Length: 336
Image (cartoon, rainbow, N blue to C red; front, side):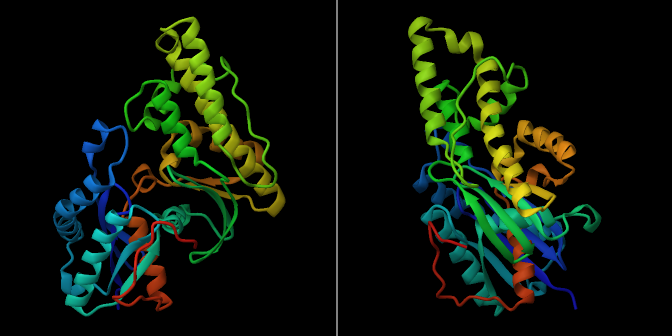
């Protein structure tokens, strides 16, 4: 008997739906919200309203593309945490209503666990074997995770303050780049010299990260140089972006290298929105060759927020009968 899961993702500003049948992704529909670029960041109230407008057509398109009828669904999986409360409530409310109307189980999914599971989407011969290490990097999280099985994971390192994605976006804002600035830094960095400007690497013990000091150093650097030459950023934009990206990537990969040496694990993955960064992807593959790693990187569409990772996580949780009642609540910040 086939097992078909509808996954719904609404943790931030993407409304997404996906259908997974027997561990295979049949559809992955995402509706982005461009309105936030006007404000330099995600506006929670606007995000919630956009989710309300988008969720029905997005789910409809996901079912249509997968050629699945509602009657064929075995369960509904939704993002429970972490994220923006208003956004999470829209996805959870829709998932609960649909599950109730179809009289099928409801599955709650942790967003960051699902990002790790995104590495298991695709050809079975091209996904990592367990155990593997996963560096999860996004706008709100930076973690190193040991994965023993799809639902048996443990965080062994995380940021003590800001996330890598935030460091990218805040640095871009300091340079006068529009939101979202992280992808623009990646784009400009490809044309620059990463050795031109040197930014400090935080000396944080263990496998934890810190990016607040780096952001401060970049702030002072930009202020000092613009005091000497108001056009400094415009004249040196590519090299500044390359240098900033180079340092953020080196911080991430140095900790990942340390984690591999300490655990002895050589199956290495990355996940999360920052995993779409080409500089990080290229440097990971280069380091992997030097270290004798087997490296795995999700397709671009599975790095940023998406419902395929929610649906696949739901598939694994269904097998363990890990369901939640209709009274289940969402949470802006929740541990694994």
